[in-house]
Structure formats: C-alpha cells, structure tokens
Length: 202
Image (cartoon, rainbow, N blue to C red):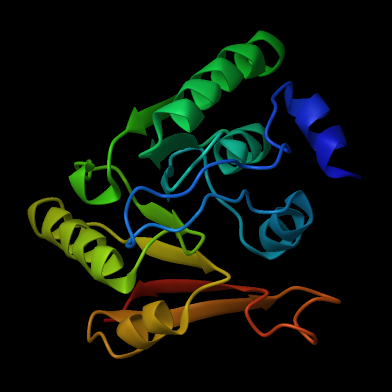
C-alpha cells in the first residue's frame, strides 16, 4: 500500500515534501517515518490502549494517527515548528471525523522537545533522529526524573538512529536493548534502517 493510500485511510495529509530548515543546529529537518517501516515495526512490537506514546519531532502527526488507529493508545506529538503543528491539529480534526472510536486521546504540543513536561503516564517515547545527542540526553534525563516521582516501566523506540544516540543508551546504566527490528530489503543496504527498542535495566 502506497504512502498516500495510508493517508487516505486515516483521512490525513502527511506525504508532501517537508519545506524549510531547522532554526537550530541541534534540530534536524523533519521527515515522516515511512508507513512501510511502521508496518514492519508493529508486526512485532505491539502497544496497548493503556499506553501513552510521546513522539518527539512529530511533524504532521503520521506516527500518532497510525498508532491510534492500530492500538487505540493515547498519543502525544511534540513539534517545535508552528506550521507542522497546525497541520497536525488539522489532521487530527479530519482523522477524528472518520476514525473516532472513543479510544485513547490524541494531543499535539508546539514546543521544543526539552520543554515538554513528561507526564506520569507517558511510557513509550519515539525518536526518528529528530535532534542532536545533546538534546536527546536532556530529554532522557527528564524522562528519568519523571520515573523517580512516578515509578513505571518505560521504553525508548529509535528509528534510523544516529550512532550518538545508540552509544549513549548502550553505555547508560539504566537502559538495555530489548528488541532490534531490521527492515527487510533495506537493512542490507543501510544499517540505519532499523528500529531499536530500549527498556529499563533491572
């Protein structure tokens, strides 16, 4: 199924090329995760309705709507670019017209990733290489601080991750690799075409 067919199924618009450059050297240009990659991920990585998934660098909300459609989880998008945020809000309105199952909520926040306040129920955090490792470390520290005050299991999901992200988590005493999903037909040509799922090390 082609990208636009998924957009049509969800009644959203996310396939257009993204214009404009980041306003900071620490933030990367926005690009949505391919639907084909998401299909492979969710064939082996399942979410629950009770999960609260935070997507850092959510753009127009593709991941958020796809997860909500498949699992009914609550999804939170964090995006710093006002234009993309507004398009995500518009997509939410159109998505709910067609796919309102009365299940988990869909939220979008327009702010820097390090300014998002981690909520006590947030337990899955998704990163498609949205910013520098310095910002990533700040966000991870915010997540760990939240766990101190509201103990819970959490997972970090990385797609097309930079070596810096992987090195940081591999050497962090509180995290361990739980799952690696290599994309069929892609990983052989590009070792970054994979998902990595990290959980708490006990």
